[in-house]
Length: 253
Image 1 (cartoon, rainbow, N blue to C red):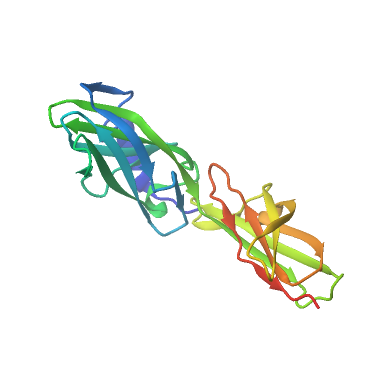
Image 2 (cartoon, rainbow, N blue to C red):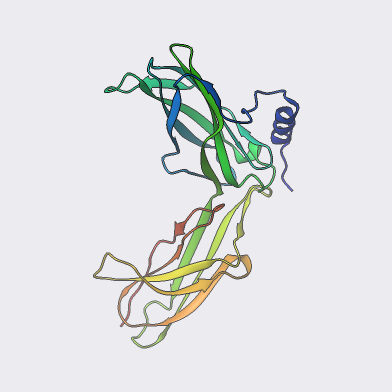
């Protein structure tokens, strides 16, 4: 079993007050306010088994005197905690000097920051915003996002070629990152759509829905009717991102 002591030490430090933990509730002085929070552009961060993932958190805030500076931190399940990799920068709007967007860059490394899969789920953005006139606003839940286990999906349709009216067997597998072992593991009991695109079309249509079995395995059959591409399409869950397999072409003769 792969383990890393770094995350455990960090979590313990936060719990004991050794690091600056996010505020327990919203607080402030004056008219400073946070108007929007955008994490990674999508509100989701998918992390694989080994490569570090770098993403941005953009917090837009306003005050009648303008925004001076901001601090951002992220926390999640199982004492999950991330600090910015560099100082948070605040840039005033070109059309409104009272509003600024403050950007923090974060890096999460599954080899260092996760010892198991428990940090997957909802994370929160803790923010402290200072205005030029001494006003401020702080909250441990300025926004939220999903920390997800990166997913993969394969497809194979056979035989190729196949005579019209014969049976085509479509297989595949849905897997996702296991942060504890550092490998990808099958995602079982998940609904995945089998889709087909005619050779002459750009649009996929759903043929049926299949549930993943052991090891995330997928298997079903269809009747060969015309040339086209088969793919699996997984909608995703709160802990696992959506993923589509690349289309597998079948020549129907």
